[in-house]
Amino acid sequence: SASLYVVATPIGNLADLSPRAAGVLAEVALVAAEDTRHTARLLRHLGVQVPMLSLHEHNEAARVEQLDARLAAGESIALVSDAGTPLISDPGFVLVRELRARGRRIVPVPGACALVAALSAAGLPTDRFTFHGFLPAKGGARRAQLEELSTRSETLVFYESPHRIRDTLTDIGTVFGERRLVLARELTKAFETFLEGSAAELSRRMEEDPNQARGEFVVMVAGAPPREKGAGGEVEGEALLAALLAE
Ligand code: SAM
Image 1 (cartoon, rainbow, N blue to C red):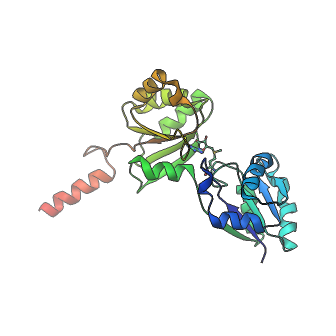
Image 2: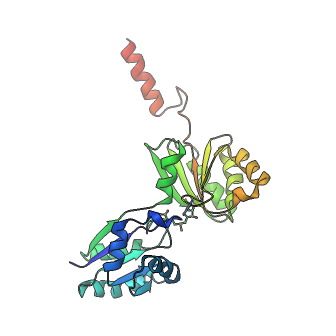
């Protein structure tokens, strides 16, 4: 039956587009794209000619009926964003939720995703992590959110743009002090770089070498260290268990 394929596209290196994704893009009746001009370049590269329709945060809700009608008529659709996996800090959530509620078949076609690529090579714990997308643009709200996360013990993952990376590092330094960070910059591209250190150290690196502040970033912050015995929470439980076992 007709399906909505949620298709991941590359985050910088065109070779990361999977053969399956290329096949789906070549076979669907319509590609719903965050930016049709951007996606046109990808389709040209693939030698694929297929009608496109824009789908972004401002028209997503309005597109639901239109795309549902196409599926009802037996036409499959591919949803893509400018880079990486749709819905991950990208449009598509409303469409997927609404089409799923209408009983349509939704098929993921997985591939590049900056947060997963970054975590896979950072050397921070990945058994537990939380993804927080983009931090608020305004300093006060940004620091408030960081404060809220400062006692969390899992790895924290954020997306950031070159416009705000310095301000964000300053605020992370204010709230997290010497906590270890890993910055993944320009993943899969020519200037891919992993930098690690405290926020203050990384800010200094960017001052010394402004190129380090260029491009796209995944910011990963190590989780809070386990709390001391007696402070409550899991560690206290573990200490108690150890004491009981010793007896
Ligand atoms: N949907 C995408 C994904 O699957 O990763 C994310 C889209 S979001 C609008 C764009 C943000 O993702 C950038 O600001 C950056 O934080 C991150 N990002 C995307 N491509 C990246 C890359 N090649 N290297 C590092 N970060 C990247």
